[in-house]
Image 1 (cartoon, rainbow, N blue to C red):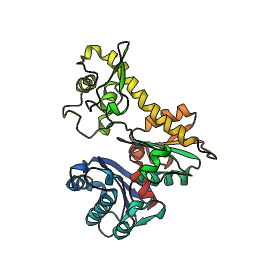
Image 2: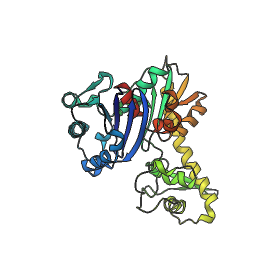
Image 3: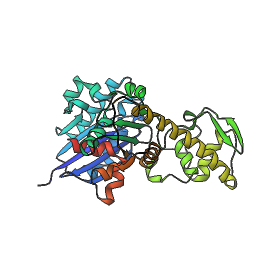
Image 4: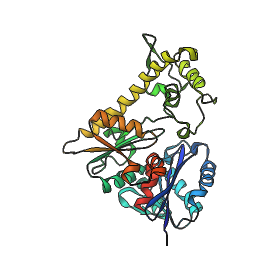
Length: 334
């Protein structure tokens, strides 16, 4: 008889869901979940995921959504989310508690900080079982995790922001002025407006690098996602209006912003690798920014393998297994 386990990674902006049947990934998808607007957003995402989750024997949950503005504290967020999810998923729901393994909603209520933002550790543990001495670089829409899988250092976001293991920058949702406050345009440097006129999704659309299936959220101005509309948002941060006929000039400006983001991730990786006694021989790339992680691996002079390849996911599902690695990992661990 086939055993079906569903893994959930509940974020503040997305719900990622993976289906594992007898150890094989048979589905992995991402659903928009603007959790800061209310728990009804999670209900809608769970409903959208029902084709993946139906008929499951087990449910395994990890989360970062407790950090969103809906909750006053992380403690409150973890308890609220675990209680809400237990009500939806039933008695088979188990919550990932990091080094403590899995527990039900009552166990979470007594030790909520073990659950808070532990999704990175699920992926790191899954990688460590299959490939020793690997560095995980998982770039999502909002953040990038950089973990020495055999020897994670920080266990909380606060600790990981200190150790370099968490770089608060992502492929799509990060505002441009949080990357850099100056840009280069037509041979000159200039300051940038420190407001969210554009995000890294706009930068990558201007560069022709973004596939729309990874960007599920509204734009900064609520308008469309064409190259022309992205260029209009990007140029606004420069205090200008842009036209497509000057696209090549703006692509140079966008490439500089992208490079500043890559440097911040590289710096985090170097900080992690600088720990005494650490031996790293390869990179496991994950997240919707796995291709960026692969580029960082190249800069570090390390071999790279995607998470989907590492777990042996078959070709049709390998990309999504890589993109939504924590959901896959927590189901595998469960």
